[in-house]
Image 1 (spheres, rainbow, N blue to C red):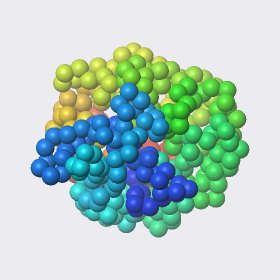
Image 2: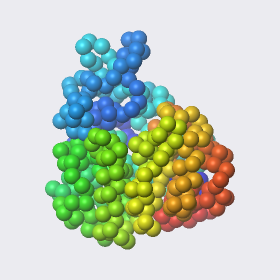
Image 3: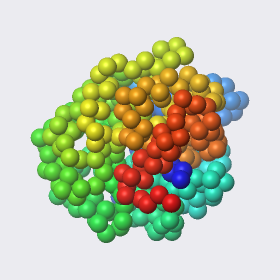
Length: 368
């Protein structure tokens, strides 16, 4: 069975995405697109540009740093803005995302073509915060899709009971398969501290009681990026010491871009510390992180894949893609083949685990 452990569906990004108003979603989108590494260009002549008209660079983690620039999702996978009478654009999605939405039937069609059996839908507030939409995607294709719950991270300290209730309903009533928690969302609303601080404990205590997997998207929250990511590793380690029985997944990988060294990835000893907890799992999403850096089939990552398998074990590693976003670099089939065809150091048992067995076991999905 091939099980994509990290994919997306999202409602039209021209709407409100489950926020109280369309402007809130637009602000999340503007910040996310402004700081993303995809290149920007001037629409008139495709000349190289930057996103400085979208955000104050020195305060890049905050929604308060956004500038007025008529930022908008313009269709065909791109976002545009206007500055000094000129229009600028950044291609975040592949051009095939014509109407800036990605409903369940489109993902399943891609899965059919690439021979992917199941996929787990992840969350990102700039792609919508509503659990109803994800639950509906899963309900449309219950044999193919599973989904993660989300609750606004920035409300967890001020409204722990409401936040717990939101996750509880998503898991126990709507049939979602875990919680996706994204610490960088806290910074958008002015909180720059650790997410294991005392103010978060009522929420985490309630989530632990649900006995559902928790997926953490660790990412740099300040500059310098490498140091910030290592601080997040420390927070995760402390969090797991407090909740040692929780099933945890580190999404996207181990901040690969922060540890690039020429044509290699050199991981410091500090990143391995949280994996001493056998309940922590790791996702492999190399193409979405490094597809703009290294070409298919990306032999540069083979040594770090081998290192991860040796240190963590294939039974705690899951493959994912970030579909449909990753299609700006690689096809769905290439995301599969670079593991199954070009990592010849992996045994058949290890491949089975990474390509579906690990995530199926974690989510109690029967392997046919």
